[in-house]
Image 1 (cartoon, rainbow, N blue to C red):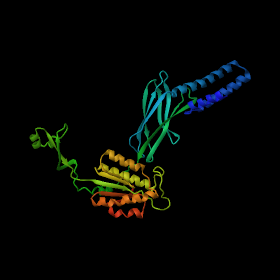
Image 2: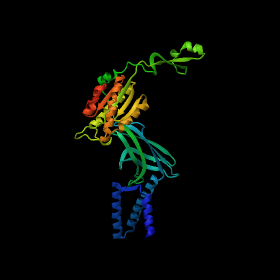
Image 3: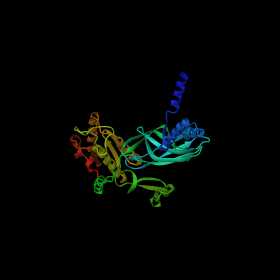
Image 4: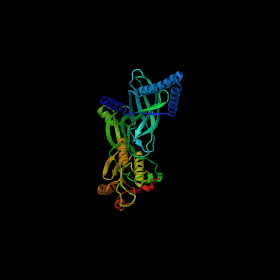
Length: 382
């Protein structure tokens, strides 16, 4: 009895990630086998016994072959590096058949998200032994924030379509989903970008002021060669110019939650898309994209967290990630968030473009509105 219990525990452990269910064809086949079995017992007809044995052997063979399809499969998932809400991205599965002789047939690959299998439409009809296949599929997430994937579910109906055998593979992955970016009215963008473009910027770029002299490199414009210095040093020297305008902007998103019904703090993924804070986040991300496209050095202030002024795609995605993971501030964080908003006045005085995005009317946050270039409300999102 004790040995039987150990065997049963071993079987449960070995097949803890396996499941089997009958298809509609399988149900009819099993019912037909039962009917033939009852008829064979009642009549004693050897032909019926032979037919019953053949049907039962097909059931056993179906279980053995489907198990062989799912054994020794290695699956890897590659998620996109950057994802935006409501924008399709491409993810991939890499499936390797590590069996020496037996191929894999009729395989479906699904993601496990929050305990439920999500069909991505990924099918693999045949995978030879010792072979690999890369399967791409579209991935669409409707909300910003962290998107966790718990694992992978493999399904096969091979060989006769009587059963669907499934195997669960724990393969946790997570990606940060950026907020959705929406087009802004052209008049608003022109109004904002007309501020802060009259200061000199000590960086290389298009202009007439001298920034630096360096050695000539392949691909440089011959018109930028500084001939006097080249003749003096007996080597070609290139003249780099200084950008004539400085475009600096600080974008602030208020996370302070005013007292009142219906406005509560919570997780970044726990709010509906039409919530004022979610609309404010989308507005902030859209402003960020518009300023980045026009060559601004951008800083971001979310509550009490600040990302300093910088440029480049890495900096741009870092700010989008911060917006994607932000949440309304709790009571303990509200005072620190207000202190960060009060610092915007100093930036405006230095000539920076300072934009304050308010999710909801709040007298505490609106006290700093006179010190910033422009205050935008979530309701202004098209």
